[in-house]
Image 1 (tube, rainbow, N blue to C red):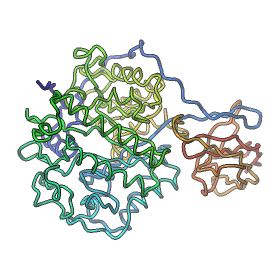
Image 2: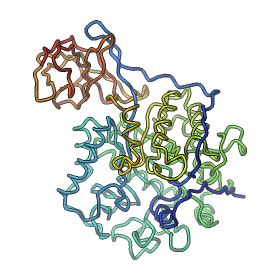
Image 3: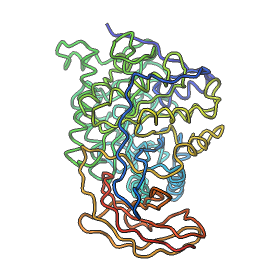
Image 4: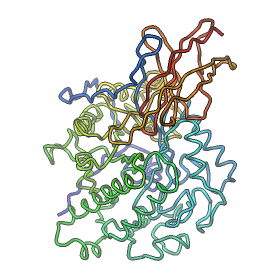
Length: 542
């Protein structure tokens, strides 16, 4: 018999709750309002090893740079973040996207996670999916006449941001009235579920119904994989990213109606385990096929924040909420243990002290899980919750999360979502940015990815350029750098002051005034491995 655990509930106005359920499902709504006591965290968890910083010396002192993934999710479904509305002209879409990238740069982010397949559609010219109506404003599958994906990847790289393409594998439509719901007549004429209705499952019944590609149908799974790998093949993306949506979250006490595929492919296995096996197969095959195509492309998933509760399984977390393993058939623990991922970003959208899922108790469980693996741990942060009653009315709630992340050696954070980062409610973003993101950071190195660090570049000239200081340099021998890192001596260390993509102007945006400064330049490969630093250059006082 299938287990059913009630989800954690948000105390929200009904209209807001229904809107969020229709758009994003339950995955981003597993939280509640609670004013926390002081909590120190689970002291039994061993902190992760601090990611290796760059090696080398500059002007006789060691260099220092933070290795930390920093990013935000840019959501396209229902135009939550971007574009601001459907059907905009190309120039306006591009201008809006550039502003989001400028926000990321201002926050010292080094990655962006862009929603390019929200519901069986695409933000690129695809042989497998219709154009997204959230871009074109129409559900006719017609091209907008330009390639948004190529532009988005190029512009992100121009700002030295990693571009992680965010896909929802199984979703085939959005609920009515904003989407077609489960009505085949309202799908785009080239939607693949029209040609393969045996792949489609509608869930739940009623007004919130949507279509899914059946996770239990091997042909549907292969098609979904191929559709995502098309983007890997065609574009210079840095990562393939899934969120928490695989089998749908349970709604209205209804079971997912996959009787036909279970009868054909279940082979007598318990249905719950069969469903987990189906999701496992998708994750494993995507990992294998991505690395076959482009070994340097990262693969990561942002799952619901609870694998299982300790009361259900002694290996579970000290929590009392919905369980991904039992309720949505996502064995997130296994994915890490098997090394099928390069990174995992659990959505820990709960405050410190929340009784059913305390951030201070669930975080150490994830830290312990990735310990000793090659899977990097980033944490999904709920910027969208800032301003709610209780703990989330405190501007410092997320700042405290990041402090705890640092204590446990967490290797990065991703913030949901871009609009909430821009809104900076209660000054929360300003606070945690000052405390945790005040200086640029390099992405953490993944030892399992290809490494080809370039030779030492040589700074040859410094010159004032308005408020900044620009540099000329000659490349080092060997491999060509993908990006650069500029260090400036400050006391007993040489600190990272700027990064950029190869071909961009090397510059210190905030040089000291009225005094000379010593600089060194390093080159990095596609995986973030830094080669040896070049010789120091003394820039005269400006």
